[in-house]
Amino acid sequence: RRNEAHARAADPAVTAAGVRIEVGANLGSVEDARTAAVNGADLAGLVRTEFLFLDRTEAPTTDEQVAVYREIAEALGGRRITLRTLDAGSDKPLPYLPPPAEANPFLGVRGLRHSLAHPALFAEQLRAIVQVARETPMSVMFPMVTTVDELKQAREMLAEAGDAPGLQVGMMVEVPAAALRAAEFVPYVDFFSIGTNDLTQYTLAAERGNPDLLSLTAGLDPAVADLIDHVCRAAGDRVLVAVCGELAGDDAVVPRLLTAGVRELSVAPGLVPLVKQAVRAH
Ligand code: PEP
Ligand code: MG
Image 1 (tube, rainbow, N blue to C red):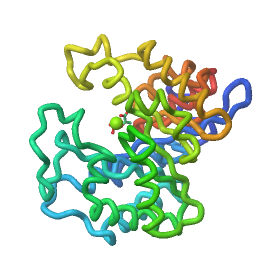
Image 2 (spheres, rainbow, N blue to C red; image 1 turned 30 degrees about the vertical axis):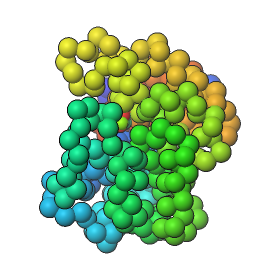
Image 3 (spheres, rainbow, N blue to C red; image 1 turned 30 degrees about the horizontal axis):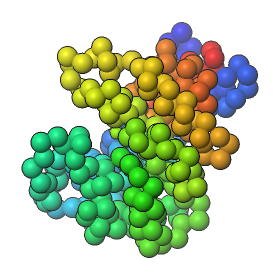
Image 4 (tube, helix red, strand yellow; image 1 turned 120 degrees about the horizontal axis):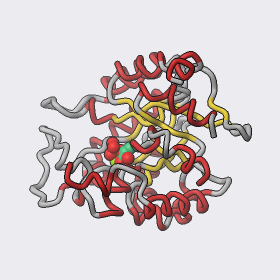
């Protein structure tokens, strides 16, 4: 099964019913982009841009960001790349922007909240994204969106960063409030990307990565499955639904996601061949 999956890694993933599912890779470095290409990824479904911002004394300039985003696009041979804007917070602090002390960093100023609180930093990243989007197929998405108002503010700042005709704009759905109100977000996005790691954490009030809570967080909880169904129904034919959390790489969960209406999966680069195989078996 493993050998067959690898032999067919570069082929498209089509279900038995003839539905094409894009299987992408989650990237946290330029090296990951090369691994993704070798493993037949159809796209980069999630580029965690934090890697460019952490562990340094100053923020990366727009030009530095442009160079790295370009390198990722080139490593993927011009396949679409989905850049997620910075998902910083006091759990992943930036040395040059010391965060406020927070008792609960996962419930604090993170993701899009952090970017809107630091507009100059956000504007530089958006300019870099727009510039590269003029050269290569690209999507951008915002992490930790909670309200429509935040999404509108982000889109205004994106518009101020300049025009890039083919740029697709989406949001992570990883806060239960956004999942429950998905229909309200539909007019403002081209796609939803469900982040099951955080969506599970926030739905079950169970911290991700806490080894004592794995019985709650390791699989697809029925409450999270209900939220995914709800998001897919709200999206209908208007907005594509992707899943980029760890669950998308679990071949026991893939059939359930496809039944819900998910049409794109993004997983760790090495899992792409197996996930494509799970799609073909569905
Ligand atoms: C998620 O929350 O599921 C996700 C994909 O984002 P991250 O793991 O980077 O928080
Ligand atoms: Mg997340």
